[in-house]
Structures are given as structure tokens and as C-alpha cells.
Image (cartoon, helix red, strand yellow):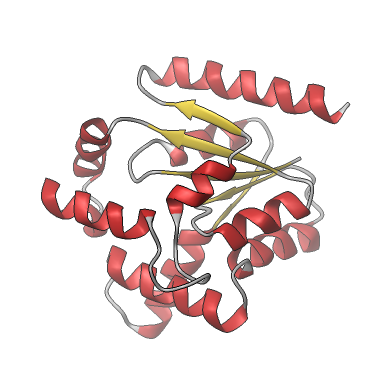
Length: 187
């Protein structure tokens, strides 16, 4: 089973992936791949730099490149169940779907998400609320062509949506419901 995870910053995509890993899924992170490239280049780990390098990869190698890398690594490892985290472009979403996968959207209200990212204190997330909103809107509506992030369009492509507005246990129940629907549709 191939699952692509998309959603807004601070919505709980990582929690969903951790739960899927506990269910035997292998994890491949597009943002992790980009972060490794930033380190290799000696660039600061910021959302702006991640967007810059991600867009560069997609422009140079194709709009679905980051998902292709994850799918190739999974094929080489021989794993059957994969969770590809941080699907941010329509090309990546399309690659997941072409491979027979499903796209899951994870979302929560903006204020809750900001509080979550502020609490995790990641270097790229230590920003004020106005900057958070500005970054989010730039990522939602890609303006630099097919290779740019366009999370809003990717969200529209999702096969399933999870609103993460309660407890972690409630989130796990919602994930189990989605997995059950996927298994039913695949049979």
C-alpha cells in the first residue's frame, strides 16, 4: 500500500507517519530529502531554503521528482507499505496516484497549527504568527509554475481528509478508518 501524506504546516503529518510506521509502513520524507540537500550544500535549514531547493529539484528533474525518489527507494528496499510524507506539488501527488497510491490530507485550524509548530521549536518554525500566515499562503498557491509547491491544489487531489482537531487517540482512530476504507476499496 502506498500512501502520500499532504497537509498544512503543523497539522500533524508527522504524527500520522509515526502511527503508520507502528503499523509496519516504511517512511520516506520529501522534506527530509530536501533537508539533507540543504546540509550538503551548507545552507541554513529554513522554510524558504527548503522551498527553494525543492522547487529546484522539481524544475530540474520533473514536478514529481521527490515522490519518484521515495518510490524508487521503496522499490529497492522491497517494502510493500510506504508512507511518503510532505507531498507538496501536484506532480508529486500525481506520481503517488500513478503508482496506485492514495493521498491523505491532514489539516487543523490555523491557530492550532501555529501553536503546534511554535511548541516543537524547530529552527525553521521559530517565527511569529504573521510570518507563519505569509509562508503558508506562499506555499498554498505556487506562483513559479508547475515545479512550485501548490499545497492547495494538492489538498484538492486528496483521496481522504483527516481533520486533526482533537486528541492523538482520536487522530489514530481517524487513521484506522482511512486504512480500513483503503483496504476495502483495494479488495
